[in-house]
Image (cartoon, helix red, strand yellow):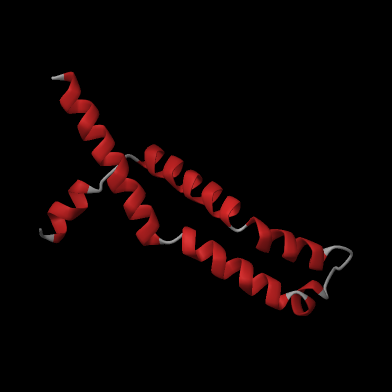
Length: 93
């Protein structure tokens, strides 16, 4: 399959893409909750020093979030959405 065919296959409306991104972010936050908690605990009561005092926790949180919020995850969500739409469309016929 060429690039153009693949692009058409995964093309969704902007509004749908925004909803998929939101779903992706919600899942990431849920999956990375323990890292969010660790970072929040470290940051509590700090201002400027949070940058260097909580560097390790911030890095762990970002690494976890990146696992669930990257382009390949978004593409998989788009493919799943398109498959679902195609299945629903074929049921109507």
